[in-house]
Length: 128
Image 1 (cartoon, rainbow, N blue to C red):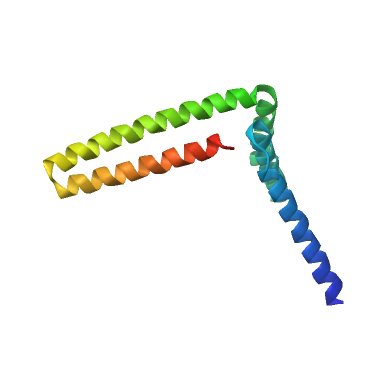
Image 2: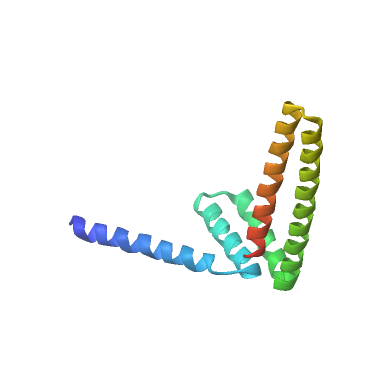
């Protein structure tokens, strides 16, 4: 009796994974729409009516306003903004190094590291 259950469980997990992989293969607005749909299903499964209502609004806005070209432009602008922030943080670090204050150098290194992480995230989103 355990074998059919194990097989059913295996198939269910396989189907879930296959759906997850295909959703990840989507890009642009299609990926955003799939993400909102997945969140909506999760909200429904947990009986979260408030979240479900918000996600339905988001879904309608995506259907109405989202274009792949517009989304690409937004993401490119975000990458440019993050690149400028990294350059500014690097300049701040260079100034701190010139003054030679270890505490200030450590602070500026952390800020630069954070800005670089934000830039990486923005570039990753651009590729989606």
